[in-house]
Length: 405
Ligand code: SF4
Picture (cartoon, rainbow, N blue to C red):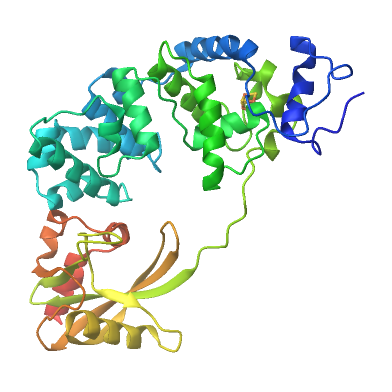
């Protein structure tokens, strides 16, 4: 008799699914009380590996970082691909490597140039870490990407995922990768009920990925598994009929693909109201550089800050500009509102056109400032919010417009 799989624990349910295919008899063999700890069972591992690699050989995308074994290029691609879509990464990857073709070139560059080539990709901490790691490696005399996992893992910004990906793809080290795609596939395939967004569950997925890994070609296998998650076992509406693992998949066989992976519900991210000012003065505009540590470190932006609930936008603009830059300004008009999402909060930022009334710039908490010609704005690396302003406003005409009046 079929049990209600949705209400059972995943390990027990998984064994029922495999009964017909692998000779398991749920009547004569007791079902485990706890989820299976050694999934997938050894007997099906060769078939899973074989079927996935055959599928990958036919369906893999031709991506630029798959045409190289250069560990530096693979490292750059893996760092860029964290949190970012493949199609977004491709032009950044080419542009970055054209400017910094090897570790030495990256180490020689100043951080502002590196950030400029990362501009628009987001998560700028990744660029800072890469730059620091390149300088460490070149400074230590080696000047090349270490082929030992432990040494590479100790570099700034290198976590388990990056270390395992680079070690397996560039050096054939038997290290299984676990990213969001991999967790989703494994959760559905094995009916793993541990929440994919809970840190403590990571080891469950890592253990499963370790068991699955084809040690004869770990780099290819890792890429195949991630590719399956990207192309077939997608977050919504997975294309199960075209999946090489459909005959073994717990979620597909039980028609519960939309119930996996499990997630713990997190508190909604807060929304902050912000203001910033375009302060024009003699055909130039004031821009400030954020501190060298913390969020968006070292990037440039228009001066601004949080708006208090009791303030109007113009009141907040006058206050935050005075606090951040020491200038007294008057507000001409509101230019635009943009919304932007960071990892842990969102902002709704109103940009105001302002006139400098008095004072000299004295920064508070910022690194540097420049009165810059609008035509030269693209020399500096700006925050993503400012890039949104530039896409929708002509700062040049705003500054020139003020002078004519
Ligand atoms: Fe994902 Fe469907 Fe393949 Fe299962 S059969 S791994 S749910 S695509």
